[in-house]
Image (cartoon, rainbow, N blue to C red; front, side):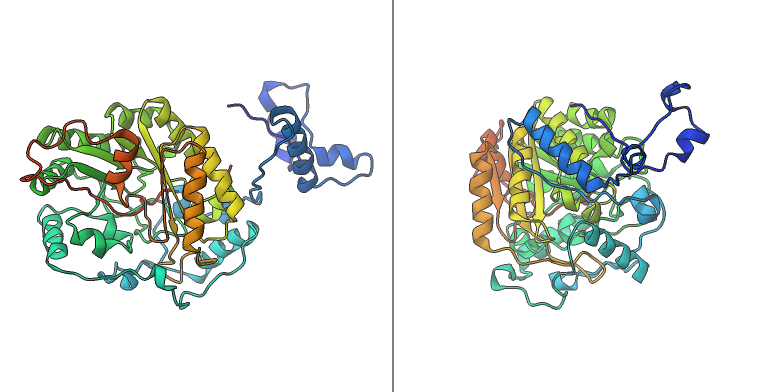
Length: 441
């Protein structure tokens, strides 16, 4: 990869009065607006982007172009405190729509919601459906808390663990838990990011629990699972983003159940190669990191992350020889062509598995749903993604990141390398759930 930057309408006061750019004292800096202004010609960002993309397509793309513009208004004061990795949480968190206990609400203000909507507006998305808008039938999961659900809940509570199924209000909770399946969310239940779509609590996190890897492993052993999914909250407060802790969980699981295949759904660790290498060295059987949305909507959907950074994380995973997975939520204002383009980007770096599901607005303080995406559109994206070379695309309205995780991994990599010796006495299981909170091309 390589890149370049152009000063278009940049304020260069500091460059002239206080900074020696690149240490070159006798060469001042300028902008296109200043140079064109000197000859009486105004210049806009839109004009520059149009010209640049046209020439880039001619030079590097043989004239072909698939364009996804990103809103370029970006000011430090337009980001919430926690989107910079600091400060208290602000969004109200409830889970009543999902038939589970509500999470205690944090401090929410009209300013926070207004800031989020302003970012959407900058990306060209207007107010969508109201939170009271009735969901279509294909988005109405059955919630039945039978004995299997209660048994799994008891196992999770016995070991003092957290499931993302509950924390993120997954619509598949009843379906998955009735099969004795769930997700472990490690590193606590407080996220250091404030993504616009996610129900997981945003507040100052506690220190990682040193014995959590052993407790997770004990639960896996009790449940006799063959495919385990670990998700995590974003931990920007930790030097390595929590990757060493996730790696320790992998090691603990394999120590007690060597036959288990382990899938990790992780944050981006701020794109730090050394931090990511800590996880990669643990060799998860599937390395999942969600890109979440198209390039244009990244700043509104997850202001602490970025499209290019996520592609970089996935590319590093693939280069490390890992089965690599990513996911998107749709219905937040993206176009169908933009999803096609995102699938092409993921296929281009060799991603093996992609999940696509409908966004469901958790509370009025979250991003609105722009539209209900029809089931046939998900079927179309599955076909397109797999034609592009992605090994397996799991796409449906209620799909979440870890939905049918074992089946998807089987499809691209075959069954676990060391299956249980006695399938009848040791039925295969899979921990499945929903997206971890992770946060501009």
